[in-house]
Amino acid sequence: MAEQNDAPTAQQLAEACAASMYERDLAVRHLGIAILRVAPGEADLQMSVGETMIQGHNSCHGGYLFTLADSAFAYACNSYDEACVAQGCSIDYIAPGRLGDVLTARATQVSRSGRTSNYDVRIENQHGQLIAVFHGKSYRIRGSVRQLENEA
Image (cartoon, rainbow, N blue to C red; front, side):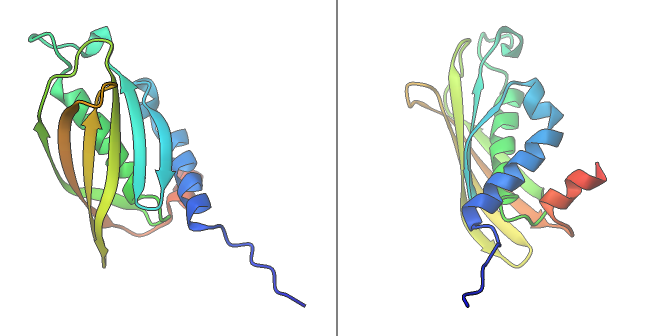
């Protein structure tokens, strides 16, 4: 008799982690950031630039761009059901985001070893123009991403 394996696939685990995080992620939901795709070590998130995101130079405030990139980084590094936090992040702004732009942040794992991982995130607008590049280093803490929902 064949033994049945009920363990989720890596993709199913990544999706379950994202769903669990999104349920608790008031900041992302408040900003209207949508999760387009998650996979092990990867995440694509999208945000539309609204009027309240425009700063004095008539472009999207860099803090919102950072938030979008940081959020994609968070969903990517927590996709293994091992709770991770940011250890350090940096961003380079390449071009301005404009009112009405639809921005997509694509986070990709660069390395994963021990308790730390590195991720690169590219933000592009709806025309494929590069808006910003972000690099994040995560640190694995104790606990499961999905178990954290029970502690909230």
